Amino acid sequence: LQKKDLTENSDETEKSLDELILLLETLGIKTKDRFIHKSHRYNTAFLIGKGKVFEVKRAMQYHNADVVVFDHSLTALQVKNLEEEFLN
Image (cartoon, rainbow, N blue to C red; front, side, top):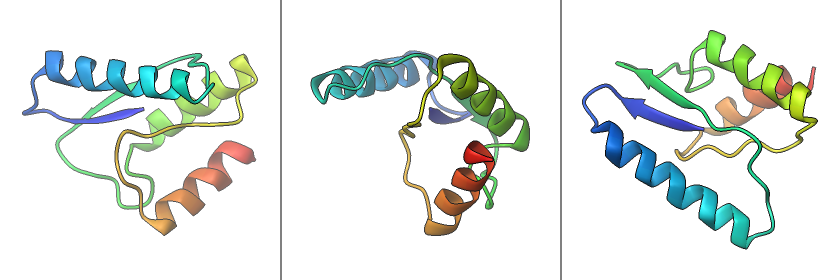
């Protein structure tokens, strides 16, 4: 999942996400879905908005996925909050 500031170029964002997917493939991790979250500000609890959390959780259930990769640093609290949302 890529967090995109609305001032970023969308081509740069797509390229960065493509590079991340290639890196994951070299690690043996197959990408089932990809998301770009566009926002003016960060959600301190999750980094992404609550609606995007729900969308990712639904995709995880659909694909039977157990890993979500963010192309952005997360705080320990954000990791904890996302784990609680995704695993419950």
